[in-house]
Amino acid sequence: MDILYIGNSFSSYEQYAKEKNIVLWSARNSLEALQVIKSKNVDVIIADFNLPGNSGLYFFQTLQKTPLYSEIPFILINEEFNKKLFKEAFSKGISDFFVSTSSSVSKIIARAESLHNLKTLNWNDINILDAEKKFKMPRSKRIFDVVFATSVLLIIAPFMLFIMLAIRLESKGKVYYISKRVGRKTFDFYKLRSMRSGSDELIKKLAVENNQYNKHNAVQSIDFKKPCVKCSTMPKDESCSPILHIDGNRICDYWYNHQKNTIEKNNATFIKIVNDPRITKIGKFIRNTSIDELPQLINVLKGDMSIVGNRPLPVYEAELLTKDVISKRFLAPAGITGLWQVELRGKAGNMSEEERIELDNKYADYFIDKNYSFWYDMRLILRTFPGLIQKSTV
Image 1 (cartoon, rainbow, N blue to C red):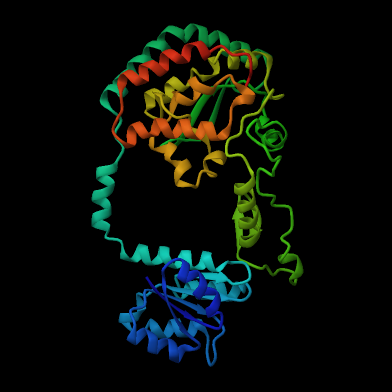
Image 2 (tube, one colour):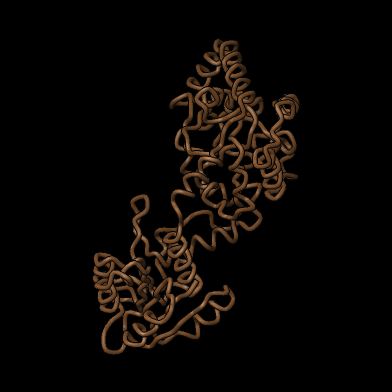
């Protein structure tokens, strides 16, 4: 890939481009840049806003007048965030906008690579590739799931009604619990409620103090109230980078990504609370006996899950699985039980994040390599029964 950088910080880009085997051309102003574009095969343009004689945005508008150059992805860089310039640049059609004081060279070049790759994609080939790789549940697995789930639900229906009545008598609220979970897709995940109402509000605090996977006692979520160190030095109503609106909160792009990177670096991926104080008495019983998991048979009938697979994750956990070696677990179907449960469930303090990731990926390998075995699933189901009754509530 060939990148043209227009500005006075060429050395910063040159060093990183060499590491990535990227051809980097340079120009100090619009005139030199135009000469490079005419003589070289430029794939992406990165330009400072402040250029001698005119601006990077003016040069972009000039290129738009020539069809041959108008399709080249164009990234505009400014030394500080200017809301008016930000809106104007995108309204005129630039590909992306970065603030040099809050964005690393590696991040800008990575964006240039993605813009180039997006432009050169052959969408016909992509559609064919997606069709070939589209996940298909093995027929024997799906038939077993439907028959097994239906049979169990019919048998336990009276018992389930009794348990739901006990849950309702002990604490107010719905007897069931629905949360968004991520497997091969995001879906509504069903469980019998084992906690007091409003327990979700305590998860961030407990994740730090009681998470059995957490080795660092690190911050578990973005602190929207904590002021940005860069914005605090700027005039009122100005920010160091674009403002993001997330769950009703306002936070600048730099401060959000700074905190997110810190979380991903220090936090445990999975959250499992030891001796969770939110659990009710009946909740402790249905957890220890795994009765709280029975409504997931409805998820199985809907096709959200399988009897055997990798546990679907809460959204806040799934968002942290950004590396290929970790995210491979999602290539297998979500399941009620699986390799991780039969190997590690009930071992509490001996359960490490690394072991869980390894086991999730091991089961996913059966689907990646098309080595799925119906009898292997049966063995995992049989190994699940001894672990259904456990002393801990993790």
